[in-house]
Structure formats: C-alpha cells, structure tokens
Image (cartoon, rainbow, N blue to C red):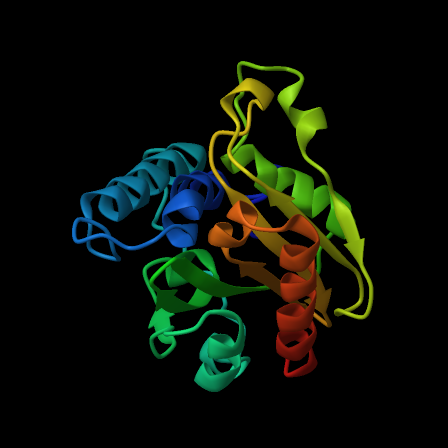
Length: 220
C-alpha cells in the first residue's frame, strides 16, 4: 500500500488521501481538524468509492494493517521545535487508520508538521510515489502543471528518498503550497509534510525535510 499515490492504490485510500493532503499541511483553524466537515466529507467519499469498487453486495473490507511504530515516537517535541518554534506537543491522528495510514501532527503558529506512516512494500520508485502525491495539489486542467513540480533526490534518508518543495502559483498550476519528503525503510513507508516550508527559502526547506526525515527514518 502506498500513501496518497495514484497507482495501485485502493480507490478509497486515494480519495481520502488527496482530499486531506492540503488540510494536513496547512495551519489549523477552528472549523478544521479530525472532526471537521472537510474530514468527514473526505472519509464519506472514500467509503462510497471503496464500496462501489467492492460491489454493492460485498461485505465491508477489513481495516488495513498499520505500521507497528507509533509515528509520534519518531520525533521528539524538542526536535520538532528546533525547526518549528512554539510547536505544540505531537498528537496522534487516527481518522485514517482504517485505510492503513497513521500519522502524528505538530501544530505550530505558521502551520503543521506531519509524519505519516503506511505499511507494505512499494512497487515503484520513491520518485514515482512522490509524483503520485503531487496529484493532490496540481491543477488537473493544466497539462503542463506536472512538469512544474521539481523532484529532488535526498541522500541519507531511508533506502531512497525524494522531496518536493513548491509554492502555490496559479499560473504554474500549483494549487497549494507543498513541501514533503517520501522514503521507505524496510516495509514501512514514511512521509514528512510541512507545507509552510514552501513559503520560505527552498534550499533551506529541502534541508529541513532531509534532517527531519533522517531522524525519523532512523527510528523506524
């Protein structure tokens, strides 16, 4: 199973992943959060799609297995605050666990840091996985938008790592800020997301993703 990828992913997981990508990466407002209408709508959409793919008479599919590692143990609160001052304590996000996705969130004044885990060996490269994730923030009506996303190979993080840092730009077809790193260690896939990094210096953002990813992947 792959996080938020468009290839070989159950339709329900793909739907909820793309629907929640921007929400997980941006600052939290009163109307947002695990029980917000946006989350509920995304989960309902995913359930409907998954139900259709199984057939109307099929029994409900069992929940996907989760990584045994608690994502909140991959980074201490003190480590998170080195990069995001005034970040709150890490909080486990459980709304997508039935899809095999578990995450830890560190909210801070400028946005949110997310460490997300899924279980299962990937069939494609980290570059392909990162490209699948980009479907959540590029304009599907602009064919050139895919070419606007820059995929950076990151050394020393897991078995293979790729990072993306792009600032929202309607002209380029980038619909929202995106800053994430994808890697895998063993049978556990890790994503580090912090969309607010895209609004600053790009090399510095890539370095931050690399450093956080190296620490987190080293604890898997």
